[in-house]
Length: 87
Image (cartoon, rainbow, N blue to C red; front, side):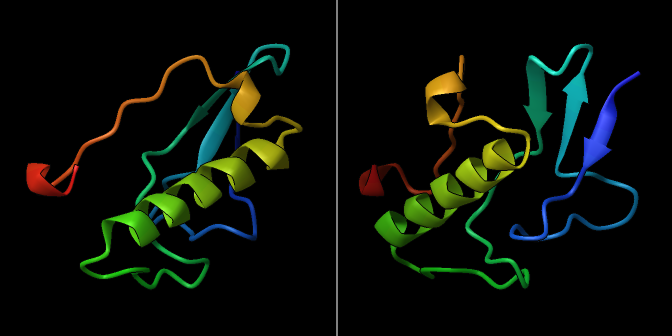
């Protein structure tokens, strides 16, 4: 059975959603899609792709740190942009 969690340093998902889940022996972590929100749920870096990416990566790092991991433990990451010209 997965263990669900919401780190206090990352925005809280709405409703019954969780920021992440640890599966099995704790070696596999699934986390919710991240967006550039601060811990209070406010958008960071409106119209500034670099600031948004930085906040999103900070959120990912915080989720991983909550379960004892880091970016070096990430196997796969998919990202989406709304304006390809900013890529």
